[in-house]
Amino acid sequence: MKFLVTGVAGFIGYHVADTLLMTGAEVIGVDDLNSYYDARLKSARLDRLKRYERFEFLKLDISDHATLRGIGSDVQVIVHLAAQAGVRHSVEHPFAYATSNLTGHLSVLELARHLPGTRHLVYASSSSVYGGGSTLPYREDARADRPQSLYAATKRADEMMSLAYSHLYGLRQTGLRFFTVYGPWGRPDMAYFGFAEAIMAGRPISLYEGGCLKRDFTYIDDIVSGVIGVIDHPPANVGEHRVFNVGNRRAEPVINLVKLLEAELGRKAIIVEAPRPASDPPETCADISALAAVTGFSPKTKLCEGIPRFAAWYRSWRVERG
Image 1: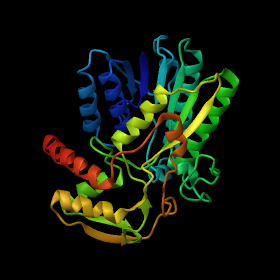
Image 2 (image 1 turned 120 degrees about the vertical axis):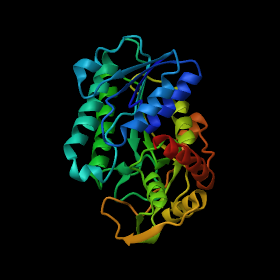
Image 3 (image 1 turned 45 degrees about the vertical axis):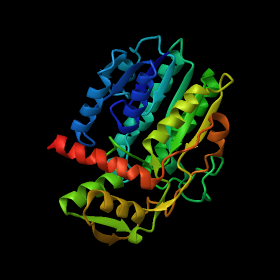
């Protein structure tokens, strides 16, 4: 089977593509390699994927629809993971989110409906769509009409566009609402990675409300398991559109994350307390029963297991980066 993976040089995109390639699939990967974070990390991920003969990389911006439409007609499954990430970044750079998350998602939808062999479009959404007014743990049928950031608004808009395209053109689609993903080869803009950088450099870290905010930290291998699960269990009906949570079903205080990093890195964090930004919910937690019922999904990795794996990778990456 031939896959198209967008955002292939990104954190989740790299891991999904690597898993697909290990199982013998052919993968076309696209990414614009933008400068949102250290390009060396993106290049290192790509170099690892290029070891596979069945991997083809195309450097392009998914919002450039004319170029995207040039991709070969034999793609059967699209895994759309490209997006402008970051909740707080959207406050200062709103138009980047309109271009990548809205126009880019529309470009992928247009590609999917015109490719003759497309069987399934799997795309990344986010737990941030729940915003305000949803009760914990978040269920997919909870209200998602009170976004607390522009990023969240764009991801919810993507879901609505996908729903419309499934209705209009019979596309089989699955949207995945990812919860706080972490692990090796992760994104430097994420809290756990930034905390590690600051701890090793002796810089202070900001903890909102003393680290009492809770997050459903989900290890990257469990995220990939969720993605592969929906690929292996596509929608049964033409025009069917589904949305699933992919999380760890556990909400842990951020201070626990910091303590684990301190233990693994062998240094104490310099903590500065700060007020919680309006875009940050006090707690997130996923109800994953819907995904489990369809695919058998069951997250395996606790935070106390995943952070040591991240820290081991981070130490080696720090040496390699120089």
